[in-house]
Image (cartoon, rainbow, N blue to C red):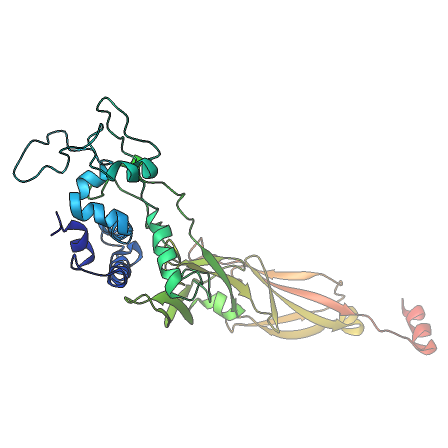
Length: 364
């Protein structure tokens, strides 16, 4: 007959459960209450921690024996009886105990666990029972079921991770004070970056891109599974190369949560236009005769507007004409656009015949 069943109730098992049943129940409970799966439940992190503490006690035969015999309060107090403990009904477990108020066998266990012994003169043990970090316990337990690999290794594809599940909001519901548990630094969020190539037309008009990704998570039994997710990536008109679009919590499940995915905008080469900031540049090639004597061209902008250009000549190499308001939309200034620039490239002949040279000398 156990003194209390609180820890067994937390894991949903009977006090007669064996070691395998305790481990299986912990895995199920830890996955159920993992903060990653309960982002809208502020109590989940505390419950996740309590399940880990319950498992840590019940999975250790010696700790479990002490808990079954004396209860959680006595176990956490380092074996000392409660301050208000009186004779009460039934046999007193501390009757006949040595100095320090510990039953036989209890003091030796806690002298190892707390790093001290029960000294004379009625000295009690201090709070010294240290629980493991709940994230480490979770990771190590699932590592055993995944063939030795880290169940939260970065696998990826591309995509976020939340705050550490082990961060405590306070002592409510936990088995001891903050000083009783070793604290590990909160793991930083893992971010995975992936390129997102876009055409100049996509960046000019704005578009929503659908991207299919694969991510690895754990099901309720602790098995590693792969699922497909389709993300809709919004591209605002005028977005520039190098811009980043972040999706939080859509990637592989890791120790502290799920990975973030960041798409980095890349610009595909265009056969007619080049982008320079908010301007669009179109280059016209002219032969030497056209550059000197004049030429006509019809140029179509990226939005399909036709520009008729007539030059009497001469046209200087590298010169250009600017058409305001026909360039790229300016993403931070709705309704405004950059310029459309027509640049002229004069193609000089590679060779000239003696006759051509003579005529040119005569003319020029």
